Image (cartoon, rainbow, N blue to C red):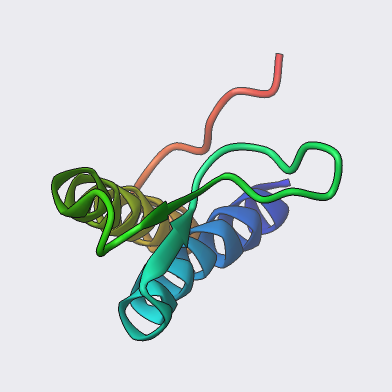
Length: 83
């Protein structure tokens, strides 16, 4: 289970960082769930302060998850309890 949890957090963490870095090229960052086929997104040119706050938040969360996953896989951190 430790291996699954480590790989799961690694994929989620790297995915968040990739989404954030891809938004620098496209100019929008997905935010919230898809409802009725419509994305909720923050556009850089419409709300720049909120965009950059989300950008740094996505990167911070992604890096935290990736580092935690690597520590779990290396055995230096306890995995999260399942019960």
